[in-house]
Structure formats: structure tokens, C-alpha cells
Length: 398
Image (cartoon, rainbow, N blue to C red; front, side):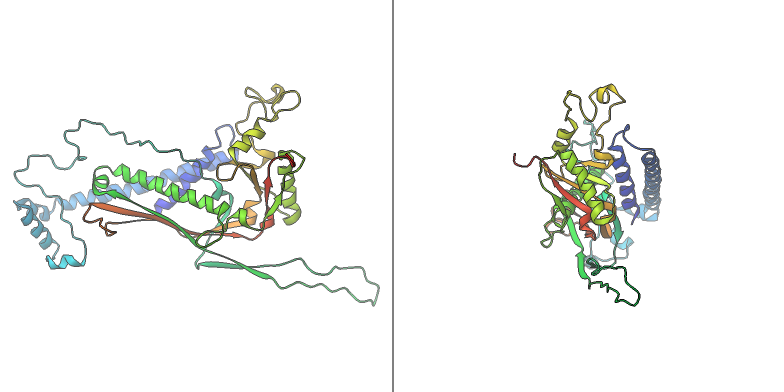
């Protein structure tokens, strides 16, 4: 994983903790936040150092005798030829790849070189653009994570042991136990990708635009990743998401939604021995539960000024049954997913997230454009589908 990927991972982990709110994080999460923040600062300083050093060295190189030769050129043609000669190239040699001269400034040019491309600078540019709302992406963090060198991961699934042990009289026949042959399951890597274009002017004069586009394009990719992890239908090239696996289900019934969410945790421990560690719920459904009241009109989760009946302080987004509660539009209204995510499933990644750019796509070169591409490869392995329960909310027969 390169430095930029490490920085993005640390920032994402810190933002996931910040999203819970100051009052809701535990002491352990506070320490984790400190560690992620410190590591992100250290990585950013290292990246900035390399960038500044590179630009500084380029500047020193520009003051060499090569620059003095360029200053003698009186026309752009002369300057082009001198630049070729400085590189030891001919015009025909440039057919093998792109060649670009440094910035040319004629002796008679009275305009200032450099700057940000705006002269006179009458309009101030606010570098904080206005972007559409982007929901927090935290579903992937619930799973265990791993890396893989191949393209497919294969594993055996064993069924229940056949036969039973029993008490036996001396000399009597002992009962036989038999372990059936396993069935083999496999999960393959799938690619999620996107591309977009910017103009050369955007890249040269407004570098912050490149940064913003990179950031939000990567967000779009991660948004699709979250959708695939939960709801992918498994038809190539889609992942087979968790909700389309052979997980447990709990249909609508006469008992309350919170009761059945708790019952789902029991189903998980009974079927696998694992303890549920998270709940994924739609914001509209969480609101209904959070605003539910008892027969005296008191909120079960505490009121808007204090806890129930004035006891204790108010909690922002209190967790359901003490489990990590992820409130997100990633899951459809009317459905709750309860699971032992860390024990039951793993996200495998290969090569991490990559961003590439070129001006060789279509007519980019002649239209002064640059094409960017962002992509990742991942697989979802669900070794224990019974470690997850899909709960359908609502009363039966309504």
C-alpha cells in the first residue's frame, strides 16, 4: 500500500469515529482516534516533504546552463529546437512518445511569468467547492479484511457430523461417527472502476480541482463498493452481496421490531456460536424505533432534554441492544441486517485503490484534456452465512 492509500485509510478510520459524535465514543475509540490522527499527520508531512523537495530540486535544475540557453531563443521555433537538443532528441524521435518543452517566454514579452493564470487577479477563488451530500461509508469497516495474491479464493464447507456417541456396555458395538465430504465454495475478485476527464487548464491553473475530483471520484467508487457488498446480485461482473447469500431470515411477526432484532442475535449465537457485533438499519426505521414511547408517553431511548423520566443524560443515536448500530441508506427501508461481521465474512482486496491518468484517450491530446481512471479489485468471502440475519420490520398481518 503506497503512502497516499495509507493516508486515505487513516483518514477514513478517523472520520468513522468522528461520525459517532463526541458524546458517543468509548475510551478505546478515543485512543484509536488519537492514533489515526497522529498517523495521518505523519503521513501528510512525509508526502508534503517529498512534493516540496521535488519542486525545489526542479527549480534548482531550471537555473542550470540549459535555462541560459533557452533565454537566448527569440522565437518559439528556436526554443523548441533548443529544447530537443538539450534532451539529445530529434524531431523524428518524438514520434515514439510525448515531448513537451518548458514554458517559453519571448524577450519582448512583458507579462509576468508563473502565477496562477489569472492576471489581473480581480476575482478571488474559493477553493472549497460546493458538492452534493455524501453519506458516510462505513459498511466495509464492519467486515474482517485480508489480501489475496490470486484471483479466486476457495474453501471447504463441512456439514454436521453424522452419528452420535453413546454409552456402551463392555464388549458392545460402538457407534460410528462420520464426517461427510465437504462442499467447496469459491469467491472471485471483481473490479469496480470509473473514469472522468478534466481540461489541461484545470490541471495547471487550479490544482485543487484535481484534488477535489480525485477525492469525490474515489467516494463514488467506494459508494458502489458498499452497494455491492450488501446487495450485489452475483451475476458477473457483480459481487454476490451479503443480502443475497444463504443467510438467516426473520419474517414479520406479532412481536415488536426491537424484540425481533434482539432475537436475531440469539439466532446467530445458536447457529454459529458467534456473538453479533453490529446492526445495519435505514435512517427512517431507526427514527421510528428511537421515537417510540411507553404507555406514559416517555421515550424509551430518553427524551430530547434528558434520559427517560429525567434520569441520566441524553444520548445521540443510542445503539440498539448495545451493538454497533450503523444508520445508513445503504440498506432498504423495512429491512435490518444483524450480524457477526468480523467472524462471519471477510473482504479480500488485491493491489488496493489505484488512480491513473493519461492524455492518450480518444482525442484528449488535441482537445487539451486529461482522462483519469480510478479502480479497485475485491472479493467478499462469507464463510459463515448463518452469522447474519435479515430482519423484516413491521407487524405480521398489517
